[in-house]
Length: 475
Ligand SMILES: [Fe+2]
Ligand SMILES: [Fe+2]
Image 1: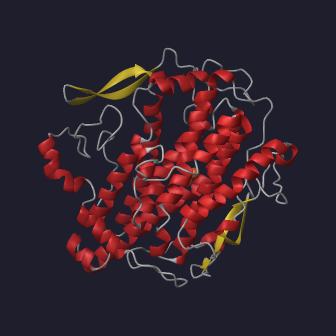
Image 2: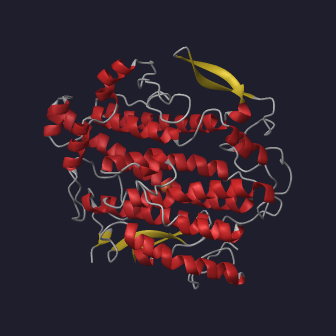
Image 3: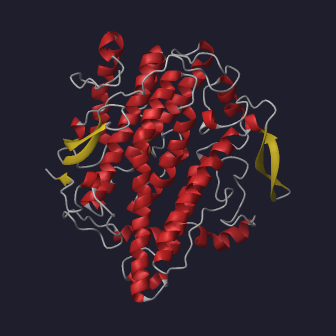
């Protein structure tokens, strides 16, 4: 079951060849997917040989194979964690009943919407990142970008498999539409706001993979608990790949910070102007980028109090982070959860029905995780004798969705007047000058072993390979 059949056109561990109708449907979708990749995937990369990992099984020890591959030839496949026939629905009103192997009729529309929304983020991020290869800071980073891109492509496959296998004609139509929407398009944009933003430079890319791929992790973790077993098993395997995406973000930002700290120490200065003259990214600019990406990503979790979230949970469709490890009744009929509210222009925490506060709870889990990342970056600064401390902004800062939308809250959590916000905004969010400066650093470094001046080399290469390995061979 866990073995992958690579002889087939679509590698899979779901016995695709035994379901000819499904196989044909996916083989019909495959060339359209490749058309989409050629049109919207990384620019000018189709003939390059890239040292990539490809999923070859779902075994924890040896699930990936590394080799050179041209991205259009990447073996995008369908991999689900093995099925446990005894699995029961772990939460909600259906708790304890056998997990569903087919979509229950009453939840069909809801499940389809959730799968489509998750699926839509995958090609969206590839589209957002498609120009970055032209300004890569090294071959190592270029390879990592392409690795993230092909795996987001595979995540699209994962969701499209569910749509084709379980949602009939509606599912096939949704699978087509996933290849038609475009990130940032005025008429036919991607579904979620953050996936229509631009990713114009590599600092933004690292922020995106640190914050927004981490939102992906939390959404996948919640869906990995689902009573709809094929969705749970798909998401579990996607999480294996997602870890690398967050690694790219975390280490990318760490290397930017390290390089800046080296320059600060060497030149005994924390003056942003002097540091910019040295060609590195001053730490307050890094913090402003971080503020932006953090707040945009928080919106992805949805409204603080949400009847949709309550419905998903009660139905057994979407659980909490690490649901099965939580020590409560997993039904939450009488439980409360503290939720920050706005009262008379002040922010106050109020106990709310836990079942309505599940978006907020998942957002809080995410914030704890990002806080831990800040602590690791601050260690880098301290080790260079730099006093600057990165902080995650207040959760009400710069929000567009939920109860804080329309409120002006500083990164420290003070509620500001509109006028005060305007006066101080330049200190909170990247300015046009910040963005232009970061953009000005984006050259293209593709000599093996060389790294752009604004970023330190990584601690080690991919899979034990040296830093000067030729991670991408250009056609
Ligand atoms: Fe993904
Ligand atoms: Fe990802």
